[in-house]
Length: 427
Image (tube, rainbow, N blue to C red; front, top):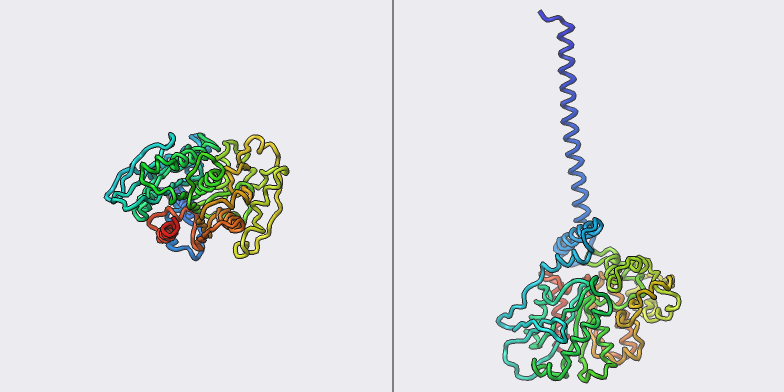
């Protein structure tokens, strides 16, 4: 017979062991729940991107912007680890969207150079009844990314050539951070001058009186500056008939416009990203980026330039929306001494005086409501109108930066159709 004290002692040991097992199981379960909660919070952070109520196809945009945000966060993290520069990593992902210059049943596609600048040439296959329109296109990408070979630009160029029976030149240019201003401007300008020579136009059967230039975002910036520079170039005898600017970046002075305030965190182009792209255009020195973000980069001796970008007088009332204009906070002269490009009219075309603007050709400007660059375009429209330039402004109330290139979206086809219709009527 087993003594009772020993038996009770064994029961107590068994009870304690069971408690330890239960605590261990509870600890494992607790850790699993904590891990799942952390994953849930991370996924919610990645997925939850508030969008305005009037956005068309919000779930489709949410899927795209979630992927963009995830990739961007990974790139930023990789840069923090010292793996590579942000733009260099982004170039890899953007490059995955490139397609070869392949002809189809409607358009012949050629890859060549204009004055040593790589370009893609799109020529309709149908026999022309007369000389064709010519359109010179400049891609966007923050002066740092993209190329004429990207699917979206290749598709647009093919469609333009076929629908308008036009010869389309889609130009490349050197990119930051390896190359800074004015390299991008010079590449586009030299390629355009080459195209506007009489012998090149004859080679491609282009009517010298029906030539236009178009570009989106940073490409819109380059369109505006090269068009302005052509005005005073004695070597260029053939002038542009039209210019089309699609949500262009046009000024470097004021990063506190109403559109920057309202759309500072909009997922397709945030204020922080736009400021970084602007600063990378001029230098890899992050001190310029920091000063631009806080609107403290313009020295007091350049204060006279603010009259060209004073939104309190250049924005229509319906775009001010109760915002109050803040007088500039001037910064040190050191930055402009090191990087004078950010106050150069070849980088910021809104700094051109009225005498230059009034000589510009027929103009079409697209702006989007949810875009930090919206007010750049609207101020440009106001200044052109004041200078007597015929200008058509198409503000997309449910639009966002990049909408011109988001194929598969209804808004993309709507904007591109409006753009094509304008070109068809005016070029």
